[in-house]
Image (cartoon, rainbow, N blue to C red; front, side):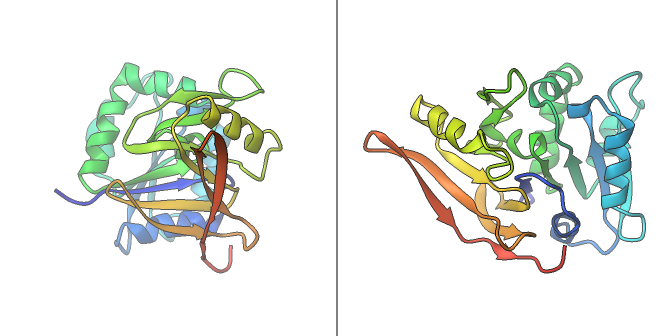
Length: 228
């Protein structure tokens, strides 16, 4: 079975991170499809996607699930080299996916060797659990797809409430996991963390876990990608 690649971006889908996603496919002209359900398939999300994944570098497309989906969207997604998931409301996105069977389809795509990933909601959705503002501004933990063990918190340096909320949630029993600053991405080969990359020199990633009755974070090295 091909080894899956998952790229979880903490926030700010900078061009350097998107270019890295294309590189992970190993193709010179990769097919990459956007899923924008976290924002309701809005035009702004799709325009941003086509800016980040221009036709000069890949073969971009998108699948909308609001309204009437294209009849071949299952076949289309499984024919991709990469699937990019945008940010937004994770809970709403997962609900829509489950109605249409994309939760199962995306697992199939990942296990077939298609690179899957995305930013914010598109980062946390692959883990057992994530930190989300889907329900309220104070942030909550929520169950996700479970392709990757543990939890994930995006926007760790981009939103002031993220660090204290993640520490609180892990202390209350949320699985240990990764905190990702904006501009940082965790790369998984199969289900194992294989690389950490950054498009912002000052950005960091952290391992956050409960040890001996207290929540601790450990900084993780991230490899600079160069110009963004």
